[in-house]
Each structure stands twice: as structure tokens, then as C-alpha cells.
Image (cartoon, rainbow, N blue to C red; front, side, top):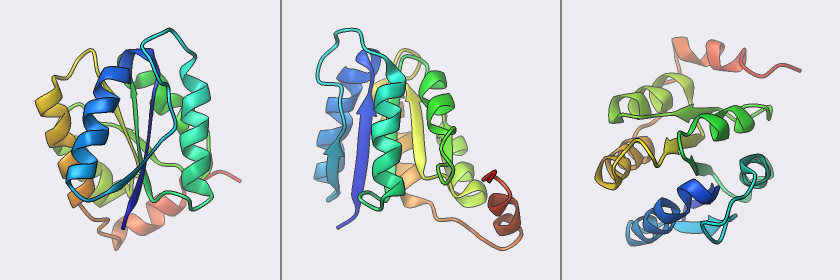
Length: 144
């Protein structure tokens, strides 16, 4: 069973709960790295927990949520081996997986309704990396 990591700050907490339920219905094992309420927290703490789980192999992919998705994507992309993509529409999610082999989906709960969010999530999870001409480019992303 594929393990999906999920984490949010306070702004993404409500969507995180809905997404977790949805992923479980789709047959995924979900590991929740917080936060556990809508009380204000610092998003980098939760991005780090999720990214560490992916880099250690505990989880295969991740979903990060905050108000815009911008902060979470910036924090996540600080980790070599993480390719976090902020995807406000399904087409971005498809290309992020196919061309960039994104392993973390970042979403902004204040700008995307929950139904669109779930469509974006479906596309992200159902799309595969195409490799080929994209492989070399993706390999150049991590800076040692």
C-alpha cells in the first residue's frame, strides 16, 4: 500500500482532514504530520516533518497545505530530493508529475475550493513521471 504523508499549518487544517479521509477511501495509507488544529503555527516545522518522512523512505509522496501553498512549497524545496509543486489547477499537477517528477503537492486552501483540490490531488496521484528528456533536467535540480 502506498504511503502518503500529509501536513498543514493552521490555514490548511480543515482541508487536511478532508483530504486524509479522501485518500483513505482511495486505498492509501496516510501518515499525518500535523498540525492538529486551526490554532496558529509555523508552517516550516510541518514542511520539515513531511519532507523528512519522504527522504527517509517512510512515505512515497506528500501533500502540504497552507493558506496559499506558497510558504509550504518554499520550505519543502529547501530539501535536496524534494520536488514540491504548487498546483492551483489540475493541469499543473499533471505536468509537475510527468515532467518534473514532483513528490510533494502543495495546495492553498484559501484560494482553491475543496472539490477542485480533490481533482488536483487525483491528477497528481494518477500521473506518472515520463522520464526521457525530462530525466536529465530533474537530475540537475538537486544542488549538492
